[in-house]
Length: 292
Length: 292
Image (cartoon, rainbow over all chains, first blue to last red; front, side, top):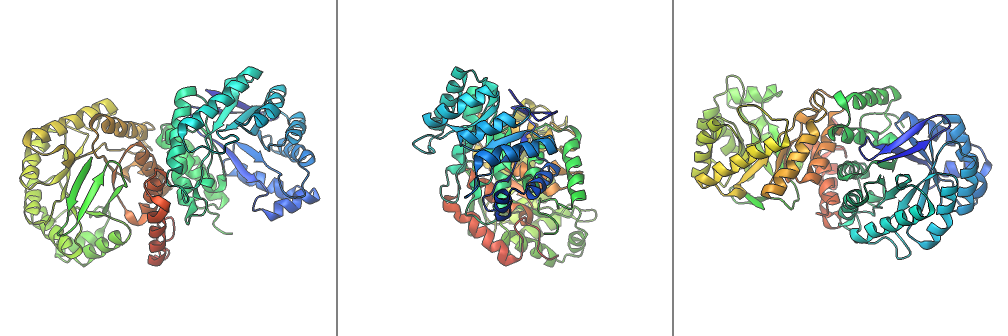
């Protein structure tokens, strides 16, 4: 199944057959004081810097999150999203649960963005699905609801089903819904990884749709997070995830390697090309900038 | 299913439920001139160095291969295997297809070693299964035969079936046969990784036995081999491999991360303990020695 996103002039397709689509996660004020300062003062140079670096490192789509204390999302989400879309011609992933901010951004962003996200709560579905339909955007649906994030893959599957059903009722095509089965840190619960991997397999098998994953929560609180994130991305790709929200500067290589090993990169052309590009950018093989 | 290996006083269990057993591959003269020189002169200090470093880095079992031009395998395989087994009290994996060398080594090695390997050829099965039975060893069976390594997972599965059948006929218990589905480099054939991963799933589903994998062929001829090897080990673990022959100094961290994500490491205890140990050894997180 194919979920098509569009920028001003280009298309990006998230495809259940792969290769994996990378959504760059770095435009997010959490733990980026410099970004918060830029958003508060209306200066976008650091936002542009983050966008450029992520695209160079392999991002197909850019996630834009402006949620920080003191930042007016309704003003800043459309402003930043439009500025990025105009300057970089890349599809946008609007990362907010604020209806007014999303509506304002959907109104101005060119092409077909992805909305990140709705969840299985009635309040979320009722508020956001109508504007997603109105602007013909695609949407990420999280497998959680009023009761939180269930531990049981069957329950996560049923929430995915509910989101798909509500989207269909309002006229959003199934292929425009990408399910994110969510993952919690394995540092707190040893079953957390397995539950998410099983949910990926179940959602893929039941609905045949695209699956997105965030790839950093899983390692929260652990040492050597990079290795845990790498292993998780490879396992998720093997289980059937076709899209990830991650830091491409660190994790593009393992994603390209997984695509290669899953038979989606003839003669390793893309893997090798990426490697050469990273060398030229001064990024060493494991994704850490050589000098920083 | 559990395959029990034994050293002088200890047991190591390869278990289909995990965690993954690591067989250290470094005692192998291929590309190690210093090791060949040691074997030719009968000096074992470098062999002991390789053994010690691998055990410190997480090896549960040590593979011993003495095949090099000018080295008499029939003398040296038992000699090196016995020396390692006595000094380190670790189960041995005897890596040879030479019947006389294996027979001589099986005669002297304490405990219950693993023989690496038989394949589906009549010549291999006929020559080696009787001595494996005689000495009550376990054995790795490669899914290849006179016709080479088949591209079709179904054919690899049928070779695995033949090896298991011949082992059973001669009285070797099924749990003492570990199947290695083999992997070729994805640099030459984009389907190579997928074929192996599918074979793992099929052999596990059909026979429920332990699966071993070598983890470095897959990246032959590619840049950034470490990332490809990491992704492959995670994918193989997800598909059902329970044992790997690899370089533990480089690849133990991704293996521990895969176990953690597959729900086999409560509170990440083993992952964190390993990380601290590697720090103390001066190995940086990605497995490269910090100074070398």
